[in-house]
Image (cartoon, rainbow, N blue to C red; front, side):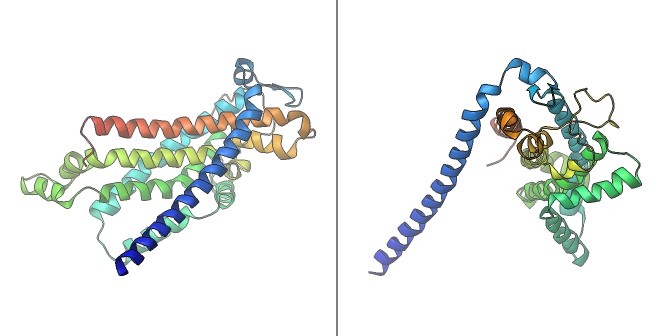
Length: 288
């Protein structure tokens, strides 16, 4: 009887989990279907390569695509090396004491800070204190700071998956600590580190609040000519078209098309992470 009761509980538990999964999947399918069905008709070569005209009621979103790309590059340049380096230091060099535990706790708390707070901090630090002005550089640095906690956390977790014996074996053969990390740790942890980093960058690419105050422009049909120029971005463009435009009903198809392009962009970034991990696994770099 006890075995049957335990089996029944297990069955009901898995059934509940499957129902939850189906509910989430159904919601995602409905959202995707709504965006794709209403946005596909707006997608064309002109829509992807032309600037907006007539108060953004016609034309395309090319400046917004370019601006999003430039900001994503600056975000990656700031967050990837700094985040991975911090993770390597915390996991491989730093001692396990009160200070390091406090640092890890602070990093995890920063991951939960609302993005609007990062936007206001970016205004104070990069726009005003560093005199970057409202620009691509200020917005990219703000998004880089926002992405940094996630990059550090995911990179450190990837480093923890490498068995301690890999390090001890290299040290026993006379390698220095950095040589052991470089040759016996990083090759096994880099796929996970890159995956978490790209996922963080894809999240940053869809954020509106941090760039709202630091550089995004309402209407700027020209391509930015430097990193100190203002720019259009897909998330902010979508926000304006959906909530702030003087004729929302007229531009709604453009808003759906912009949302579809943004979703495809984020999907491609996630796909890059999957491909990188798959190729490294296929080459035998990733253990297990």
